[in-house]
Image (cartoon, rainbow, N blue to C red; front, side, top):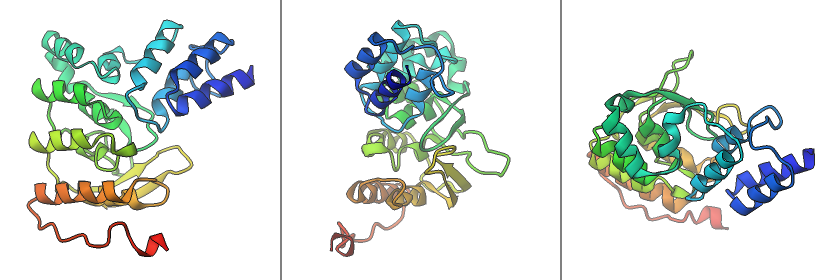
Length: 248
């Protein structure tokens, strides 16, 4: 059974829907804990961000998984129409707070817009912003005074730069590019956990160049240029991209 569980977790890493289905058909459970965590928690916490996440979630739910916070469902599925409909019925959802394990920027005491930004779910983010979500809402601050980030922080160094369109959407809607935090604990609980101090969206974007963050240099500097301009700062010529020293 452990081999089947490993097969399931491996399929989660790349949001490989058919491999997940095969693992479930082979006897893996969609509901019972695997190595201390439920399968859906593994899926949501891991580091891949893609359009296939919704299909993976639906498959697990069809096989008996449950979501601790059902309010998140349309956001995680990137169903903009469902998000808009839910907020029309319950406007208080715009202030709803939730927590999820995240391989990158923390999702503790986060709004639905934080969640949409972290997973790169553009349809959900757009629906929330159009419904009046606060683009400068802050997540929870931990016992050390770290975190408290706005949704923008989740977009500036995202996996495969998936959240860049949401970054632009947030900036157009008035997100502050010059807010400063005491720090963020990136990858909390993972072996790549890194405490990053005195961060703004600009400096946090540049931290995508750290080796443990695994982001693409051209993407990071494109995001930096946009953020600098949004903060009213001069965007200097970036003449050494890609970095010649690193290409030797």
